[in-house]
Image (cartoon, rainbow, N blue to C red; front, side, top):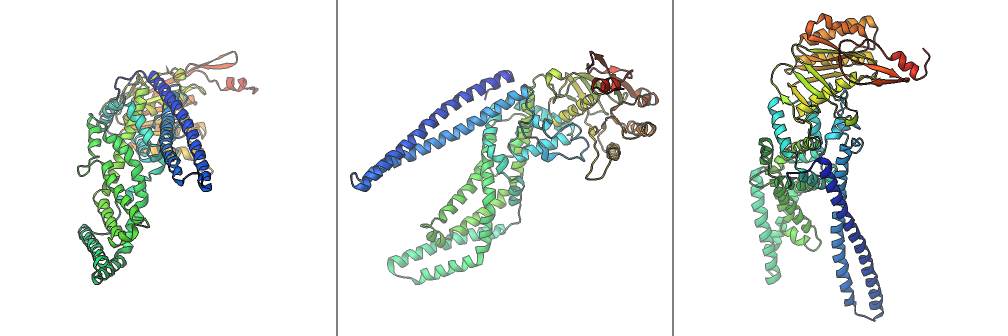
Length: 599
């Protein structure tokens, strides 16, 4: 593990070139093996014809068969390596795409976590194509994706955020670990059904532990005595003990066959899922961690002195023996040994003693994957600092804030400060001047900060905050709700968030634009006054300059700022720089003329 990595672009390019070169070698080897296998098969066919005609012995066929089997085994290994190298190359290609701001649509969008009723998820583009989730997520399990989504949708407390920051810093340079998890996790994401596996591990017991101990001893002794009595029957002709033993075995199966069949049937899918998960668990078990959070997570992967991957191996061994018992040649012996019952009892013991930890294992993997996603983001943006967390009253003090979803070439940075003295920024300006982007920039950096990630800023000092946003509010044909009704419903939700323990950051874009100017002025001022009175901080954007007078009624707690534009050669030019005061002009008429509308 190389902890002294080059800058992200150099390292990704170097590794991509290396993986592609090795991939080309393996593909050439695969083509040669393909030709060799068919050549050997042709030799086999010729020898078969000659042997059928009596020209050569049938023993001559043994050599090409052995060679063909060996070539097939080697080819399977090469094909597996090709698949791994292809996956690794795609991993670094996607990393370079992120560095080139060409990543949208290439990753998991997290749309399954989208919730229109959430107070800010849709407004801040947390999920969907080109979303924050797609930018961040390197998780390979569904549980890992769900954990990252939960972190983005719910702020953590200061202690937890600080612990995550230390863990992310430790994982930042663990590029080998991230690559290994990608290689191991291709089938895990689609194959591991988290809820089903966890439900199986926590299902009601089929037998009590006392019954399990009794049945384990009973089936082992009975099976041994039955086989022994059958051997005595065959060897000495004494059949009565054997017949009695066999009758007892039949009685046992009649009594417990339903329970044992249920145990064996129930374990089939969870065992496959656990085997897929075992690779990730084994890789994490080998990784040394120093930070308190990661060390604590690693400690959770120790169960009864054995790591989960070895615990799963024990279950896999039981199922392997069970498959032997189904072999047509061994099945009669397995039947007399009560082997299916013995395996079922052992599986139930495993489930009750070890299976109860499956949920904890999955949660541990999920948390490490979420941290690793944030670490990848931190590695690829070395200039992005971790924010300073403060446990004071509501505070957001950011310098050179940028939006992480915007290409660096188009990301114009601004300073924003909100606290108990200056609770509100009233942002005026013309269309497309940057008002909504500023609002989203503030919100999304709070999301990153309170998830434990670096922020897109030169510096950020922030307290734990709830976020309430009304930016992307639309009407709904399905619910029959107008845009205005949808907006006031969201405003009610935002105001109610002030009853929570955390201070509120509110982000209100074009507040109450769906009603007339008279009602808008009265309603907007009432909402803003209520939020400020309750100790919330935030931004309000507006085209209606009448609303900017709200600042006059709130003394220094509200500040007017604006964005400007200018018309050059029929084109609107924006600098996206926040300026103090109220905007003095509008570009609406100029824009209409620019697109050819006579006004």
